[in-house]
Image (tube, rainbow, N blue to C red):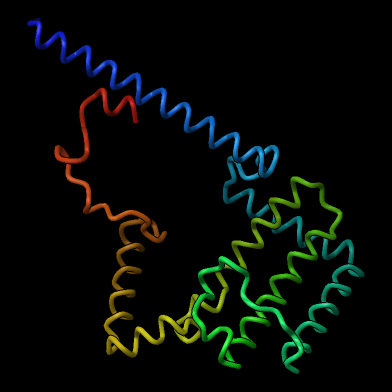
Length: 218
């Protein structure tokens, strides 16, 4: 091995060690932040079977405590009545970008839809919070409820998304066609999950390494 090759190998070894140390530090920071927010993280290792188990627990609570279910249903009915009569003052939660469009505050139909959605979501969360589940099971159940309510949010439909509807009109329907193409591509190539990263931005050999050392670091 020449002096240049030896120096290159030494530099590569140092880069690998630095990258490994940074990765360990990032993992420690992430773990610390998670513990600080939730204590022992109830979502670690959450699988489909865990989600189904949480749903079963929620259903069991509804059967075992019908009075609680009726009380929460009555509270929801009161909230919905306030929404219909225009006495519900709730607005989109600050930071919720799904409802950032001014139409959710300014247009009566959208405002009523939003308030009804928020009342329904709060009723479900309130039922879980008041249930007899232990703290860890409650956190898991709240997580499952959030998955369900987020999936059924009005913004996930074209008619219930004023920003998307406006773009659909302005683009002459091409935005909807592009969205359908993306959905089809995700269904075929990404197991039905929305693509989070533009994979075409990575080029092997240019900005994506393939050496054994790179594989070990990653």
